[in-house]
Amino acid sequence: MVPKAMRAAWILKQDFGYETRILNMHTLKPLDTEAIVHAARDTSIVLTAEEHQIGALAWPVASAITQSPELYGIPVITGAIGVKDRFGDSGAPGSDQGVRSLRGTYRAKAVELIGVKKSRSGEPVAEVHLVGTK
Image (cartoon, rainbow, N blue to C red; front, side, top):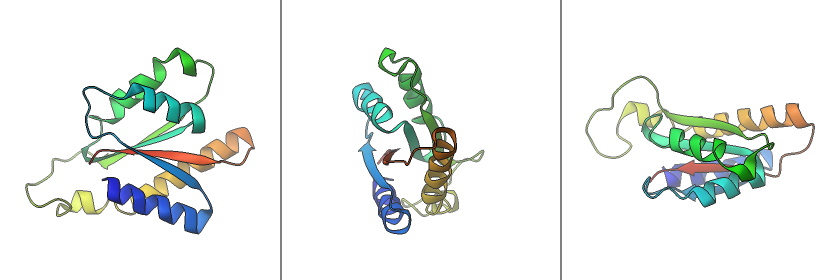
């Protein structure tokens, strides 16, 4: 997922002028809550990406954001990309249709979240964080 997130980051920069930062959350335990909180505080947008059912990464990231006293009073927009409501098939990485459909989803979801932030704040967006598993 990290290479796909990097590709999405490049497209967001080329097509929209948005700066991004990618966090490789290669393990869930221990969860790097410090990096998550720092990303949320810096940008107020966090987008998780999973190559399986949404939740294994999205929920702990959302929990880290909501439980951090450093973020109290700071609005943070969150989003999640992953396979929705279906189980994947066995095979080579990226061979599953559900995973292939995620390729264009990064860009669309990031642009959607950035649009939400812009409409709420009226300020230009400096960067967005794409958080993904490997």
